[in-house]
Amino acid sequence: KRRRTSRRWTTMDAEKKKQALQMASQEMEYRVDLFNRMVVTCFDKCADRKFKEGDLSVGENSCVDRCTAKYWQVTSIVGQMLGGAGQGQ
Amino acid sequence: MSASSGLTPSDLDAMGEEDKREMMEMVETMQTRDSLRMYNGLVERCFRECVDNFRRKTLDANEEKCVSKCTEKFLKHSARVSMRFAELNASMEQQQMAQMQQMQGQQQGK
Image 1 (cartoon, one colour):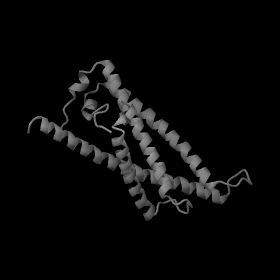
Image 2 (spheres, helix red, strand yellow):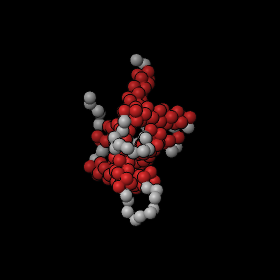
Image 3 (cartoon, helix red, strand yellow):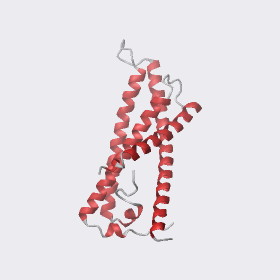
């Protein structure tokens, strides 16, 4: 799969490049935060607290898979209702 | 979340060395900060879950075992979520690209 070199980037002036990098940085922060919250939330919902084992059981694994899928769906619904306000505009 | 935020893959291809370096530094800083945050979070979590008697200054055998298992379990859990997150992300990006291509096709009157 070929990707054409972006003319968009090379014709951008320094100011626009700075803005693009800032936006990318914000997006990255958002993703990292989303991921971290997903980890903690699904752990709290799914992990057996007695810590008898260091491994996750089959049941816990399924729970985690479903939890992440549902969490993602919720993210999407909320995002739509907020009208893409996650981009900070 | 729209696909038109910040940088596209073809932007990354077109970046000069200096811009690339700036990007990499940003990513690295973010990763380091995130690792440290996770470390602290995990310590607090396993402490809260496993330690609740203060008869002695040192952890007893049960508490130690609990902390080990707590840490191990959380890290494995985190790895699994990471896998699913990447899958969900990839499938969302595919959907967005398909939508964009469809829109472009319509604009070109295909």
